[in-house]
Length: 545
Image 1 (tube, rainbow, N blue to C red):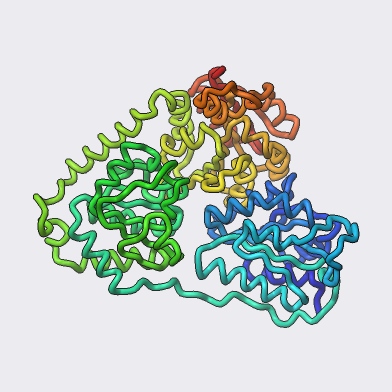
Image 2 (cartoon, rainbow, N blue to C red; image 1 turned 90 degrees about the vertical axis):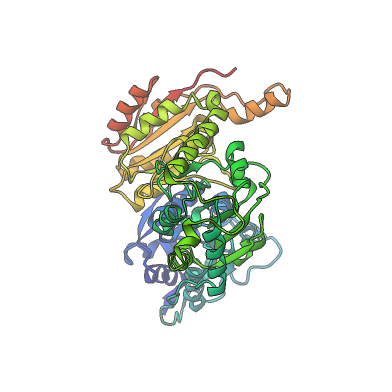
């Protein structure tokens, strides 16, 4: 016999949950009552959206689902943007909230935080939004959520527990656990077909998304075996070290790279939607055959349809593909494919081609990106290889750091792609640091994006852990300002009054400084990585007006 609140916490603990993010409220206190007895540590952000972003980053870095707890009504709606971001980026995020009482009438009664349907609201951004009807069903619902996280494309789940059920004492039944699940195995004939395509290709390429992250070793082996240059999406950044001779980094947005990709005779795309948000424009028409690897069968005909679909998780599929390729006759990999003009380029020529393509990519945006590149090099010199960098929907991040701040598979770069929320970097850094307190974590943001969640400096200060926040200040919403100017419009509502962000950091219990050279940034960042609490380091950009 358990209360609903204890049943929630028991189910979370049974699935290995050790950390949760959220804000207590009048309707969820029975959940909070049981967190400590069940050994679940709690982090209290200053806004539920921050709780969602922190739990999102926790999941990306730790490999375990992130858990967020809200109260009813406005609190749940506050976290909805973070749930939408987790859905877009395939992040296993579990949100638990109270709801209106079991027998609450459909007509409004004026109950605190009342809204017509929380589950319908969350179904618009989550993969599943489920309202339980008994204490015993709570354990089943949590087990189902963890089953969904493990057996398919991981996406956010919302579980609503009626507020009177949280306090009710009912039979809870035995603990329910998500069953062990073997990774789905690819169809053997599809693997052989993919090996034939790749083995005979003269100009192969790899496109890696976030779904390839657990198969970094296999991706690197395939690139070397095939002599295939590698380009990634934002979520795939660093799956193959971006300093590798075959890496083109995050550059699907580059016209030169898109033209090069369109000319490949075989493209192996792993764990990516190949969506507009990945290429920042129309999808390229491919001249060659497209092999897609994805745990989600629906991806095989979305965007660019697969010529050879391989359904399964990336390590399993790519391991089978490597076995098929290395078991093939040597000539199928290195000789002259039937109907071709000659053998593949040797390694030296291939590396030179990749270097030239990188140069062409950088030439396209050299003038625009010059304001960030020296500072990003300064950041890279200071950070450890396994550092975690969190990012915002800011120019310094998507134009600057994504293509110009190299990351390897030991590190992580977390960026809010697709849904493209603002204010992600700071609370995400709190979540990443909670998951991995021993690793360096740095947030990158612009002044506009930071102010969406700047209150989480207080959360960072409360953790007492070093957390540098590097802010490139362009005086407002620089991207929208430039889009207005490009339309011939007079910019309006995009120039923000200057804010002394370092002083604000100090007010929240942290530290702050302004730097004006890459050398000053290196020194400030090195100090911030050793200083408990948040340190805001502001880099003023030239006044664009």
